[in-house]
Length: 285
Image 1 (cartoon, rainbow, N blue to C red):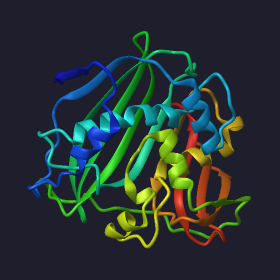
Image 2 (image 1 turned 135 degrees about the vertical axis):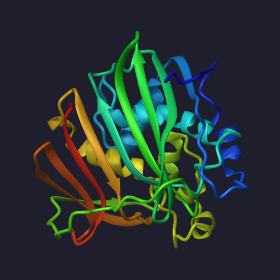
Image 3 (image 1 turned 135 degrees about the horizontal axis):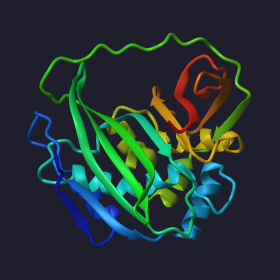
Image 4 (image 1 turned 180 degrees about the vertical axis):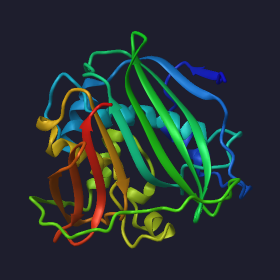
């Protein structure tokens, strides 16, 4: 079945889009828009890309990280769930998992056509889950795809929740430790342009149940990929599960091990006892 596409003249301004996303929903029944939003001819800001790479630990190069394209699509996430046809608001939703596929290297000078739609609304034991599905094209060729799965706590969706199975965690010995400063959320906000205050404000973080600001899961995702970027094929797939928020400041560990797909990356507590983020990375399928 075809999907209506709303083509925007430019990426939405994050301030206005985020303000709409802050408006509480009056419904506990989860609804998502049926249409997609699209922007053509997106020019990448090389200065912003360089700053993003520095904050996340990537090497400066002509080809861009997969997580950078996620950052470029994020305003469309906010705009879509700020739409009047959505009862789910991105602010307050929990980013549970993220999957990205880089089909080939993308040059920083390439103009991108970006599109996002919401899909697969389903029940969860704690609320409703949905996917925000993104795609980036260069000259009509799909070069990147991403699926961000969110949990809207306290909302309902038709059906019965599927059981969630998780492999037991075995403590690991980190091969590296990172010290995350208290202002890392502000540094990441400048390059990602994500204005969510739970990453920068103690007051806002406490309002959502956190003792201190938390670093964005997509920074952790990016930092882990940056640590192994020399081992990633140009066409690769990364599947991330966000398990435990990282409160700033913090010291975390990185563990790397082989798996069937390629590599298993784990960002853990500094002693490796508990995982914050798990990533499975391998060649694109």
